[in-house]
Length: 67
Image 1 (spheres, helix red, strand yellow):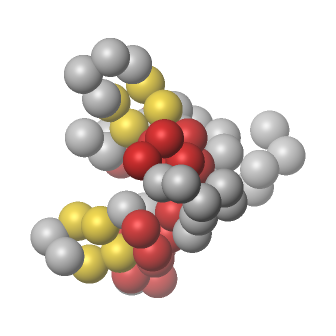
Image 2 (cartoon, one colour):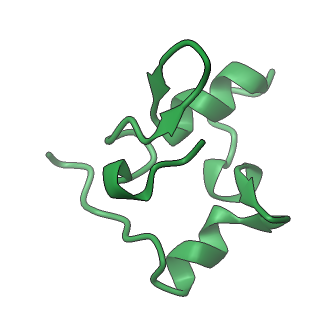
């Protein structure tokens, strides 16, 4: 489950809760993919639409990864 209030960016912000732990979007995709550096903005979807569309519509805000 993606928690919008905890979302920061691909590597920052553990915003996805699995049964076991909190993960960043990058960690979540890497755990489920055989490909390192898989495109999390495309691979994580909500109702069949990629997260990139939520970012473009400003429903999710992508922050600087320099935290």
